[in-house]
Image 1 (cartoon, rainbow, N blue to C red):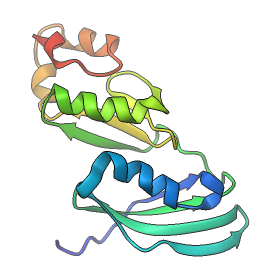
Image 2: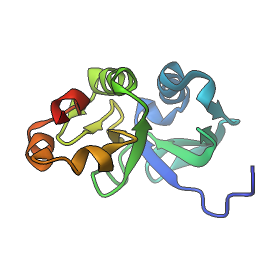
Image 3: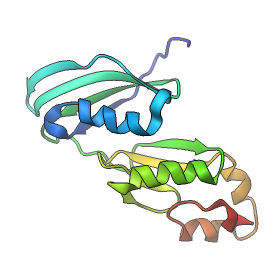
Image 4: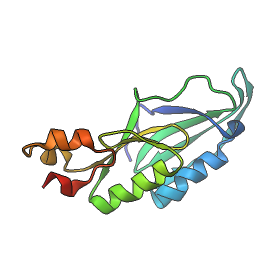
Length: 149
């Protein structure tokens, strides 16, 4: 992979600042598509005990930081779009992420660590080009592709 010049950093505040449970949560869902680097202790910070590690998800690198106390809350200003090939893949990710998280609308949800996701079909723009599609989208939480037919 070409050297990635910009690496998004996601700062969580959970599990007393320890990353092991957090990374295991994502590893359970993404399996071999998630590579987890070495966890580095940052020790005691103004936000309590903190750790960080680099992860690679579907070839994209991220830095995960975790602190015991919330410094900045995660919100809808930043989300990860997860393109899905079919309804089965949408269902898989949606069910896992919302099980201990929360649903929003139009394919948006938050996982148990409050990271925002957009679980959308790869052909969303094609679906939205159909008559009445916007009204369908506005009524959905999880996207149901067959409702656009």
